[in-house]
Length: 351
Ligand code: NAD
Ligand code: DAU
Image 1 (cartoon, rainbow, N blue to C red):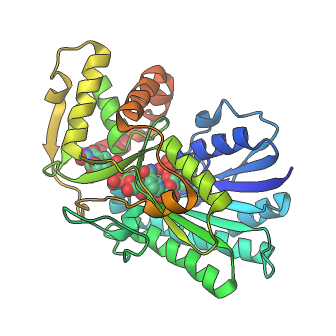
Image 2: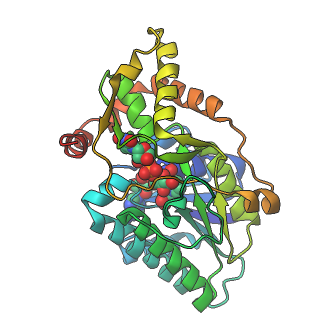
């Protein structure tokens, strides 16, 4: 094999799309998917590539230094794409320490292992940390996040991601570890765990359950189709400059309530229901504490310097996403059975 790459969090939503892209596009790379298989990790996401000669799965927790060392020892990787994380803001409000252990300590563990196995020469190595636009905090009604925007995280999730970004940068500066960081906006698409807005609402529309819109519904997010994020990660891994950060976004801002109404309309059309049927499920509920009003990414740098831009329009991406959920009822049923219902009841019961 020409290269060996460890992808952490490869059984999750974005990670599984990145693993698939790399396994199929680079048959001469060995792709090692390192994942603890938390509630969010699901090997069903990768059924189609399981058995590929250039793919292996290693169940390991990034909180466990011995386990990460063992994977490095076994595979001698050239690169890491680090996506493993606790990723849901509402869960971070319920249980912040889980986010500290995985997102902060887990990331520092990985940095230490990379330094130990790769240093002090580091030639041909790359530590790529996948982060979020939430580290920048909230925007007012105008303006964009650029690579120069100061960090200002508001939730335990974004604070833990900001801390991990700082550690990655510090290991680059202090030890010369070849690092690169990207900060991406909200992803959507197949395999998205139905605790996040779009898949949760698709699932609730399918089941005729209320659609819990937080606060006044006028919060704004910048949505990007997950496969376009995976393409951006491929681009940055191969062509991004060491020590740099790149913002990734969809140039696609939506107020939550407008997005929910669009989703309702598309689902009504799919089911051949009377127009307005799904909208009747919309229920305004108590707001998320510390809720960031607006995110919007200026993705000029990655677009100008590396030639990446989104390839899927929002209308196309949403239609593909809805179709995927409707044709993967078994996947949806598996991930929403068991502990999912406990989470759902705790999160939405009192709102
Ligand atoms: P996800 O929750 O769907 O998947 C996370 C994966 O990490 C799961 O497979 C889980 O099993 C694994 N994991 C969690 N804790 C682990 C641990 N301690 N050790 C090993 N594996 C562990 O997350 P996602 O939405 O796919 O996000 C992936 C990454 O991208 C995260 O770092 C997230 O911060 C970042 N990100 C996400 C979005 C988004 O919109 N979803 C946007 C920008 C950045
Ligand atoms: O911006 C990137 C981030 O996007 C990622 O780093 C996170 O991992 C990812 O979870 C996502 O965070 P958000 O908090 O923006 O996503 P979420 O889907 O949870 O919420 C999107 C918006 O919808 C937000 O304004 C809150 C609102 N919302 C969400 C849920 C789950 C509701 O109104 N009702 C809901 O039930």
